Length: 183
Image (cartoon, rainbow, N blue to C red):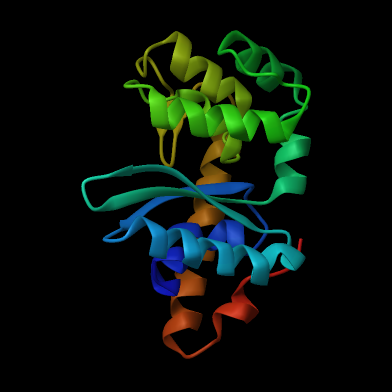
C-alpha cells in the first residue's frame, strides 16, 4: 500500500472534507498489509484517521480510510439510521456499524450499497440508489444522485479539486504527514 495510492484515492478524506474513502490496493501478503495498516493507524490516529481492511481477494485488498468522529456524526442522520437498521445494523453505535460493514463485505456475495453512508454520500442518495436499483437518478459523479443535484455537483467539484491539489503537492515533494490534516 503506497502513500501515492492513498493520496490519489483518499485526498478529500485526508483533507478532512469527506468522512471516508474506499479504495483497493495490491496485496501479495495479507500479514504484511495488516502490519502496514497497524503502523498507519498508530501514526495517524492523532489526526483523526482510521484505516481498515474490508475484503481480500485475488492479490488485492479493499480498504476503508475514514474519520471516526465524522462517521459517528454522519450515522446519526435519521435517514441513515433507518437505512442501516433495515440492513441489519445496530445504528446506535458507529463502532458496531463498522463491524457489521466489515462482516457484510467479507461474508456476503452482494455489494453492501449502504457503504455510501460511510463515505459522505447523502443518505437520500444512498436510499434512492437502493430503492431504485441504481436507475432513475438525476445525475452521476462519485455517486448517483437522487436528492439535491446542485449540492452534489458542488461536492463532486470540491472533491475533484482537492484530489488534484493533493496530487500536485505530493508530486512537488510535500510530505504525506503534511497532507493528512487533523480533523
